Image (tube, rainbow, N blue to C red):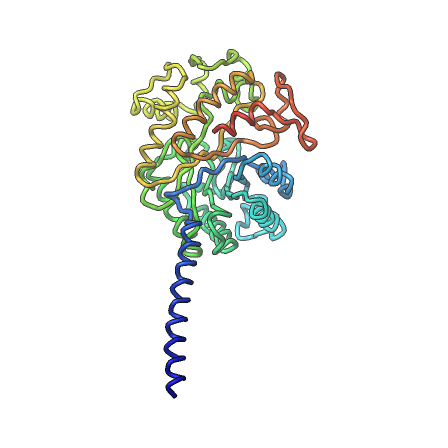
Length: 397
């Protein structure tokens, strides 16, 4: 009896010690891999992959080789800018094509396999596309039916990836909100935008409360949105300024073939300011510049990048909002040396701010592979043409 009592006491002491050690081990594991949230974004760096960018142009599976190459090149992020028409229909928005959705699942699995974070983005959402030539049967910002569809689709993705760690997958709600409607081309206001964002964030969190959500800034992603800073979601900015550098001779932007050949630093050409879509939207842009003490005629250089593209977002960041650059790049017709000089300056400031980025794109006219720039000596890389100089610039940042 006495022996049994001693054994029992010893057992309790021993197991108590093991319990403490187990708790320490679990705590150490947690400390070694802290949870990723909207206020503590890693400095993810990578590319946009375009397999499901425009439904009637491409609806292909994502390529495992892209994930493999991105990892080999030392990067760790992909954004998937997708049209909801790849898996649904505006006339029947509750229809979900499982075959296409499984191809998106596969991309997420590729990301997990190769250590690449996958950001799922609605480039075309129910009721909105950044492309003004697109027409939807309803308006995301004004119509209840469109907002129901938007909530429904994001709720489905929330259920699909429920519980998956944020290190593997995040959601980017809608690409580059800017215009209220296609007919009047009025600017989308923060008040209208924040109402839709609050609603869809609730729909996602009702399913998966901890999912990392990223919301684009206004004015095509350029302007931070203070009105949603309390939602515990990150925000995404852009790197397409000045457009004389980034869109020189881009066929989809009218008049760019008449712009002067750009260099860096760059003196703005007043004729390029006419690109804005309406007098009302142009006024919105000029008023925004006035608030930050920037003149449209101010030379594009290190100082203007800081004033216009960095400082407003650092102010948002100081409120506990994580910042990531969802898209940036310069089209292949811009002189390569000008692109690299501009890129080095812009990305150096992002690095100082602690922001990650995603280049548009990986393979193609803005990217480091197969961009067909006329003034680049390419390097053969796994059957692709690699812009080694550009790769070195982005890896510095």
